[in-house]
Length: 186
Image (cartoon, rainbow, N blue to C red; front, side):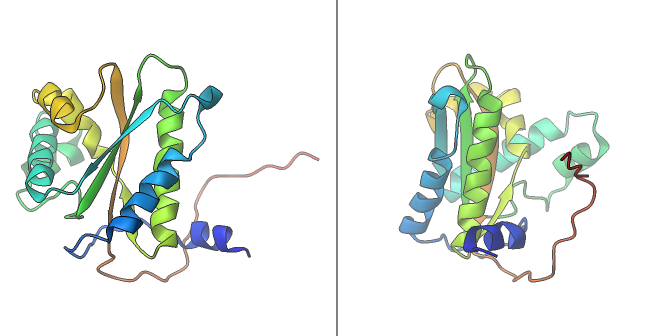
């Protein structure tokens, strides 16, 4: 198996991180992997906000939980009221991916960037996890304030995010893939 396929096969979502931030070169390499992802018509109309500031991460976590408290989904509602829950798993870095909401296929473009960053983090020995909870920040009462604070361009919508950090625990068990049926037609 080549190195790329090995990294993809071993990648797991990490939900326990060490508090220290990875080095600057690793963070930049991960973001560059996201920027290198394919996009519809080669437009690359994405925006990346890299949040490393602990106070801002805490503000974003509180905003997520405030919105979650108002949702009908039982699990999300409970997490919003759980004082111990951190939507970002206490990771030292959150990378938010937004795309031009006026362009077609932009959601897929952002998802491709997010996946590239997950694989890049694994290839560097770091942990990462796709976080959809971030989307709630931009649906709540503080959405515009956070858009401005993070410099998200006008007309851009947040589609996904990933948290990154050093893994607090190593995971080596084989990943079990369920579903995702494959049919070959020769």
